[in-house]
Amino acid sequence: MSGDRAEEIASAVRGRRLRAVDVVTEALERIERADPGLCAFLEVWGEEALRRAGEVDTRVAAGQRLPLAGVPVAVKGRHGLRTAVPLLAAGCVAVGATSVPGPGTPWQTWGFGAHGRTVNPWRADRTPGGSSAGAAVAVAAGLVPLATGGDGAGSVRIPAAWCGVVGLKVTGGRLPSADRTGLAAPGVLTRTAADAAAWWRVVSGRPAAAGIPAAFPVAASWSPDLGFAGPDAEPVALARAAVDRLVDTGVVRLVRPSSPPELLDPGPAWLALRTPGADLTGAHRVRAENDRRLDRLLAGTGLLLTPTAPTAPHGHEGPGDVYSTALTWAFNVSGHPALSIPAGFGADGCPAGLQLVAPRGREELLLAVAREAERRGAAV
Image 1: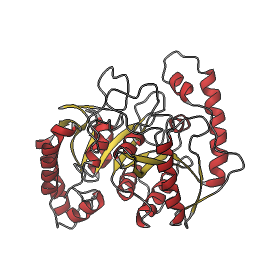
Image 2: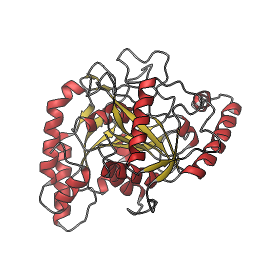
Image 3: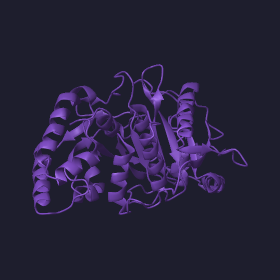
Image 4: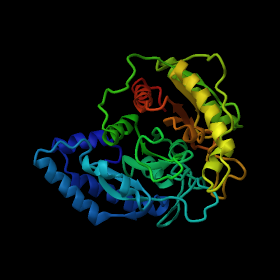
């Protein structure tokens, strides 16, 4: 059942072709076998998960229609259940808390699980990305079909890219977040865009067809570096090849904006906004100017496409002086929703990602484009 999608599981449980208890039992067995090597989980809630699965079966038998009936979900960190209430109400069963960086970790692109440092499922000597490290690994390794994340600078999108899964960061402020700065937004990691869309419908309360484009291709612009970053050649080439597949299959059409998609480097602004007592004059100036440029760009094209991460996954010794967030944190500062989809594999055997950015409040557009890419065979 490890290959099953969330929507497939829920349909089978609602139709009583599967029991939630059996689905969750299999998920727990997969975790027990694989997690000592992957270190994706901080805690596994076996007994509680089976009890909740039994409750889901009872609710289904009573005639309740649960959109995500019996779907095993992993939540980010030990406090992840606080934001998973809508998922549990929809029939998901939380099986455990995924790994995040340990206290004092100098780089936030890995995690520490119950058994040690979290590893990339494609290469154990490489990081999975972070801080939603265990979430991405649990999904990529087929332990669960869906995992929650939080994205303050790329913490959903970077691990999605480096583990070869789908990762969505929602519009800033659209869903509740405990981050006092407003930079962090909730997100989800899945193996398919359809499952990410199912998550979005539940947490947002939006109807399935809301915000979906009337027709394809969708106008989009491409930027390898946002005008300031210095990404490595390989992730740029992989992302550009993914763009070409989207164009060739009629999912998007590239347009050349009147001015190139260039932003001011958001790094200093992001760091100032995260620093208590910092002088925010410069940060507000950068934010306002980048907002102006992005709003003008997206008003004319609809989507902005970039590589998700500027480098391939680094080793466990850390990234050195390279910020893995170089291409993602601009959209935490601006608040735009962004989605990472798989873009292929580098020479080291590790995945890379293509980032899609949409106007604020247009999560459905991102998900529709990603679903259409999967349907037309443009997705890796």
